[in-house]
Length: 291
Ligand SMILES: [Zn+2]
Image (cartoon, helix red, strand yellow):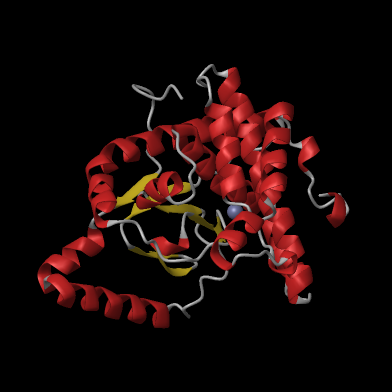
């Protein structure tokens, strides 16, 4: 993607390195314990529930990146942070244009960059949560280490793979400001777990569709490079429930899917990319079996 020397979003809270400061005071293992204690306290104070957030995948495994990869991630961090700020600016421009065209005003979300642990309006989270959007505070939370994981663990390299993840999270913001998120969450509270999971899949596939709509505009603005869409499609496949479950457990349990299969995620992203409009993205109007 062409992203160098372009506008960076100013709706960014850069909280990177804040927990590391605590570690420096406590030193080594002691610092780690200090951070854990702080997180536990924060969790208790806030009710300790991060169930109300929307993440990129159903994967909640802790990172097992080798230490040297983590080190190189720190070195590359500033460049990736700059990239993330440019993508966030592009996302602002696209959704402002779409909302204006529909006679609506777009409310900007905020991007929070953090290291290791973060306190969000939806509770405490750690980088093992992966990127997520919190509807309570309109913020997208990303520990940039995830982009290393995307490349090495999910085998989804490329700058547009990262852009897809960010656009997907902002897709949840669009659902929130349009009232879709609240409607779905209220329905889910009266359902069985299996039915609630189906609604979650619909939400997630719609966020993939909305990420595709964003990519449609980025293509129109001439920022795409050869291979970008393939990178996004590959990333969408990589975070499919069937793929993740098969890798972690050796088999997949469709009733427990919360984000959709690899094939569904690719297809809904691509549908949004081709269409470029909101109209074809109603994942709630399709029979679940045909989704
Ligand atoms: Zn999501």
